[in-house]
Structures are given as C-alpha cells and as structure tokens.
Amino acid sequence: MAIILGIESSCDETSASICKDGEILSNIIANQTVHQKYGGVVPELASRAHQQNIIPVVQEAFAAAKISKKDVSAVAFTRGPGLLGSLLVGTSFSKAFALANGIPLVEVNHMQAHILAHFIKQPKPTFPFLCLTVSGGHTQIVLVKDYFDMEIVGQTTDDAAGEAFDKTAKILNLPYPGGPLIDKYAREGNPLAYSFPEPQIPGLDFSFSGLKTAILYFIRDNKKLDENFVESNLADICASVQHRIVTILLAKVKRASKQYNIKDIAIAGGVSANSGLRNTLHQAAEQYGWNVFIPDFEYCTDNAAMIAIAGYYKYLAKDFAGQDIAPLARMSF
Ligand code: KG4
Ligand code: ZN
Image 1 (cartoon, rainbow, N blue to C red):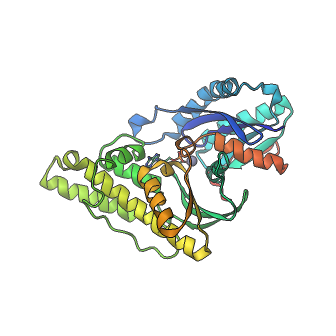
Image 2 (image 1 turned 90 degrees about the horizontal axis):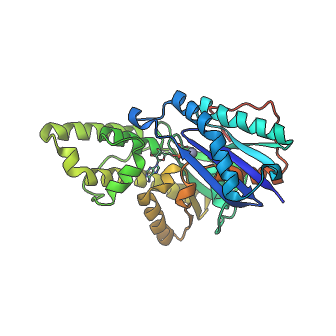
Image 3 (image 1 turned 60 degrees about the vertical axis):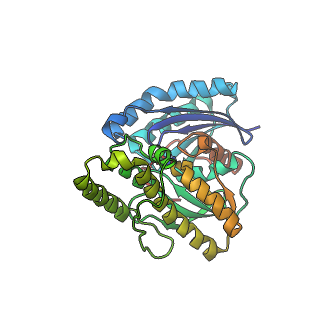
C-alpha cells in the first residue's frame, strides 16, 4: 500500500492532498485573498500566507482522508517552477515531515503535475498524447510519451494565455485574477462583436503580447468616443477577447495534432477551467475525431492532488530526492 502526502505552494494557493494507491482521498486548498487589492500576486505576502496556512491545510487533509500521519509512505512536493519564497515553504515543510517520519521525499515539477492530473480519474489518457498546458505563467504544447517522459514542442514566446486573460481584465478594471471573470461575462456576450488580431507565429509557438496591446489601444480609442464604452459593452468585449485567445490556442493544437499524428488531446492548467476553451475542444473532438481529456474544475487550477498523483508514480519508480534538495523558480522537464 502506498500513501502519499502531496504539498503544493508554488504561487498563491497552499494545498495538501492525500493519495492512497493512486486514489485521491483529500485535496485541501487555501486560497490567498490578500493579493486582490494589489491586482496581482505579491511574492512576499504569498510566502507569509503559505507559512501561516501550511500546517492547518495539512492537518485538514489528514482529517478529511481519515489517514494517520504515521501511515504515510512518502511526501511529494512542488520543487518548481514558481515563486522561490513560496516554494521554500512547501519544500522546507516536506523535508521536515520526511525527516521526522523517516520516509522518502519526492520532488515534483509543477507543470508536469498539471498534466498528470489526468491520471486522477477515469478516463485516463494513453501514451503518447498531446497536452495543451495553459496557466498564469506558462503556455505549452507537450508531447507526453510517458509519465515523466515529456517534451515541450511549442510554447509562448512572451505572455502566457492566463496572463492574456489577467492583463485584459486589468485593462477592463476587473479585479485579480481576471480569467474567471472574463469567462463569466463572456457567457452573456457575442464572441464575434469585435475582431482582435491573430498573431502569425511560425510552428507550434504562441504569442499573446500583441493581442494585449491591441486590446489596450482598442479600449483607449473607444473610451475617447464614449467614456462608458467598457461598462456598456463588457460582455461583448469579454466574449470577443476570450474567442480570440481560444482560437489562437486551438489553431496550434490542430497543427500539433497533424504534425505528430496524435488525436488524443488533453488540456491542463488554470486556463483549462475556461468554458470557452472547454466547449471549443468538445466541438473540435467531433469535427476532427479527437479523443479529448478535460480535467474536472477542481484539478485545473493549482492543487496538491496533482502533486500527490505525480508523487505516487515517482514513488512506484522509487525516484526519490535527497534531503539536500532545493526549490527552483525556473524548472524545465
Ligand atoms: O495553473 P494556475 O492555477 O496557476 C499557475 O500555475 O499559474 O493558473 C492560474 C491562471 C490565472 O491566469 C487565471 O486567471 C487563469 O488561470 N484562469 C482562467 C480561468 N480560471 C483560471 N482563465 C480563464 N478562464 C477561467 N475560467
Ligand atoms: Zn499551476
């Protein structure tokens, strides 16, 4: 029997999860609301909030799973990528827990864990598959050959898709994080009301910074004509921006599917919670005969269940980390 304690603290969610033989028994997430008034995550405040939250979150994860601390087989933690001060809290906690209980330590790459969240529930994808990983800091197309044999075949050359959502929200004076709000308003709007440019980037790479500038100028120019332009047309603006972000993402996934002749397509990361992206992927599944894998909402944004499941597969492979391990703000596969 393998019981894994998973710890996630890479950005502004403190999370702990218990996984027993590949089944998630609990997944507790403490969101940090302290950043809202600053319009983005303040690293120093994030570290302090992790420090306050980590033990209560772990206690709750054990209680919800009805598992005793002494029965844990290994502790898995996010080593990176992320905010260094935030990562240090989860890393230090995990090392101390492993040392105190005489159990192995397992390091997990946060971006790989987003993808491995697909192995929490049925139906699970079969290797090889393609995964579009879209979060606040990353936008990648990953060729997933095995649990820990992954190749990034396309990525953003500037902003991430989540940033495109969050920066648009900022331009529209919506609170942070804006992605979920744009999604909400977009439901009531016309996605073809306004047309934003689609960047011409070769291969499987992405670019979102041009779109951000186009939106900024579009809002500025229209506000000169009508100072209530945003308030009067919020739903249409959100729907049109979301439509463009989703079409940019889908065009590259289509290209990757053709290039690698793979029709098993997954999405992962915070932006995979976006209803426009989820609907478009379902439509594409019918249109192109794809098998699509879309995570439950709970496993889209940052959570420790994905760390625990990734840790479980590493535990089976006896892939352990030493007590001298340190977190990495930047970390590739
Ligand atoms: O994966 P995640 O929780 O954290 C990172 O590892 O970055 O992703 C957070 C990002 C934010 O940019 C947030 O605005 C975006 O995911 N997001 C969404 C939605 N839910 C979260 N973007 C669009 N629509 C959503 N429903
Ligand atoms: Zn993430």
